[in-house]
Length: 569
Image (cartoon, rainbow, N blue to C red; front, side, top):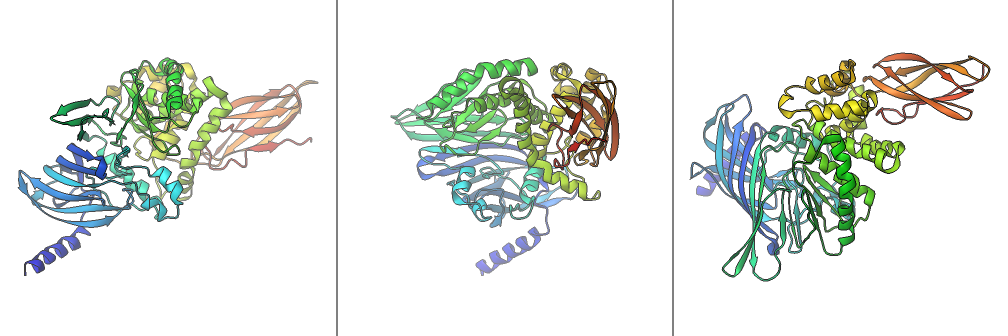
């Protein structure tokens, strides 16, 4: 009889759960203690989480989700156990492709904007698992290099939501096989939790004897080792006052510490040469960043990954990458990125991350291999968002896109934003942009017009049209081509060429175009608003043969129509 009653409650909760809002509550505060047992690949968690009802309706049900390889042990409110049932929930937001979902019945309804603090406990294993990738057809060896999260005796590295739900979250189902579902769910989660505070104390106990492993979660997190009887306890304090775009991550291994603040540098045995490359890159990277962004104000951490082919991962001022790769140029731009985060901060992802990626491209141009190499670097970013922008252009207003001012989509606030800063630099000049960066104050950035006003003032020109198309709204991308080029003789040895550029796309741009002639070429710039044309005249010391619009510095939906051949009349 008792089992039938439990089954009835379960069915009632499950049926109502499908009609309820899994994303009604925002997790505003985490205060957790995480105990690691590497030999068993286990994790045990205890602590408190604070949930705020950000929906418009009172809520009696709260959803708490952790990785499917973890199990709920306790959920309490005011010291008293609350009623909950646990069910598997398919979602690729965790590396296993599923979550363990607790459907919690609160003692009383939570009104909009009310908060509730829950005491929680859960435990389980975190082994390397690429299920969510292999089930959509990605070969196992490739999937393993991407999904490298694990707790193990020799090496531990675990990223947070979007990779492994090692702390509680609440999202709708995310599925890699359903278009952009995975990214949309993860982006909504990041946006909701951007102002959330996250505190975790990581602890690992072991027998005394060998040198203790390094336990790392943030570059500034306090790491302690103490002896307790015959045991040794290794711990790290991890604190993020605002998560922003940070993904809480921890790493543990027998590292060699090559740190020299503000550089925290850890390498694995056998990767000493790669570590030395990063050490050598400190000075040139620091000098470049200081010229643009000022001196670093906090530590950055570069931490080695055990898999030499592992996909790198960056979160805030922490970079996880294999030091088996002996690539000095890559090490330099990696350091540039992290140093920008240390020297400059903004609550707006498109500014903080966009500038960091812009700085990488600028370093490629000025300190490594020139403008073409920098544009090749940017083109790698272009592929991340161009398909999404094509959808915006063809949706007839049904898809509003992702305005940079508000987006939490990584392909936009990292990749598209890098292009935006590059275009702004081309338009206003390096000196003006450096003035803007040095004059930026987080406390004054209260709306999206703040940066626009700084740049317009430094450049002494109105750039409202550019910010309207690229930052405040998502108008898609330009589609530029040479509509016409008419040459005529000016003197015996020169021509005047009238060039008309048409922009078929929804976003305006100031774009370079090049006129090629026997013995050389001339490059000029022209502003072409969306769905319009612009004409200019250029004097050429020779006979013009072709005009090429866009050197790759402006992202376009179509790069196949940028060359115009000039034929003799």
